[in-house]
Image 1 (tube, rainbow, N blue to C red):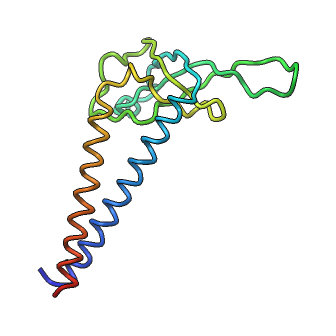
Image 2: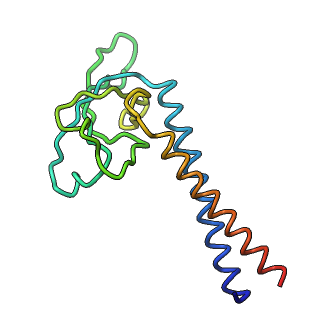
Length: 153
């Protein structure tokens, strides 16, 4: 392999692998934080309004969350939130997420649209996280190997 090709290929692979690892770490940290400090709730899976939305593997959820409080003694209003959960990326949407089904979630009280499925609702998320991490590590290692080979020539 030519030095230029190895350098460019190694840089692209290393950048992709590094970015993928950073994204994986940020996503896992966000989900863990929302599950730990978030407010538990029950959401309902909503039917998609268009056919392209049905292709998304993550279900569309709706739930009620208390609106921001204006001050002491202010009445709490509930706002309806429509969102998709973070970190749920199977190839196909599981049948347990059919429209009208209730799902347990946790949401960030400061940003109610930031929702994660409760730990009991996530089947193979750990496996998926490990696969994405392995892909990132593999790309980073291949890129580093190509860069090392290019610099020794």
